[in-house]
Length: 249
Image (cartoon, rainbow, N blue to C red; front, side):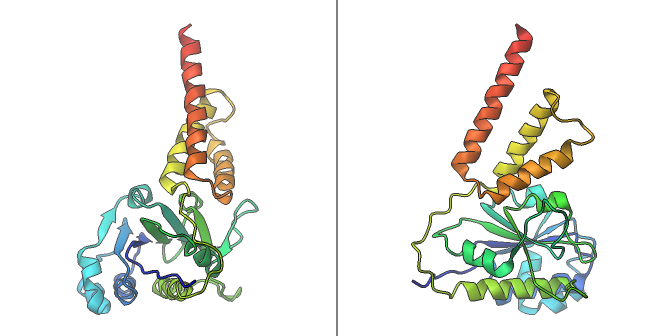
């Protein structure tokens, strides 16, 4: 069967862009590929400048209606699925990346995803490890090992083109209902887990972030469902209730 997909629910998120020309180019691409919305986290340039608007051409509406956030968590609060683009494919042995083609084929095999976002990092240093862990999946664009870095707007153009191309492919399996735990659900769960493990003494403050990131990476890799993350949170809540009541007795 051929999947009829469009980008009516896709949010493109830029982290701290420092070039108005790049912002304008991305806005133009959003128009080219009928993206739903452009979101920007802590811009380091004037995204409403004449330079940006001239570069955007018919995409100026994406600049005019762009939503600006002061952190990434707020920018993805309403998204069921969050993907992150990463130019570094060997950050650590615990990191797990997939090719953009594999990720998009997987994404488009679902019947419906209400809102999904693709995050792009800073022009000079990409996304931090903690930001990458806010995504359900992280993908890379294969480039030369000698010069792997892509211009921001070029990366966005490749991603949107590949996503559009993938939407025209035939899939032999039945369409699945999207039931993955959202990045917000996973993030909120691990805030509670970290607090609990610090309280019982399993984690130490100066090493907690590193250890909890490894656990979180495992959960993301496992394609954890909404039901499974709800069970995990229920276990954490019950343990915290028991600990609090034990102190009172």
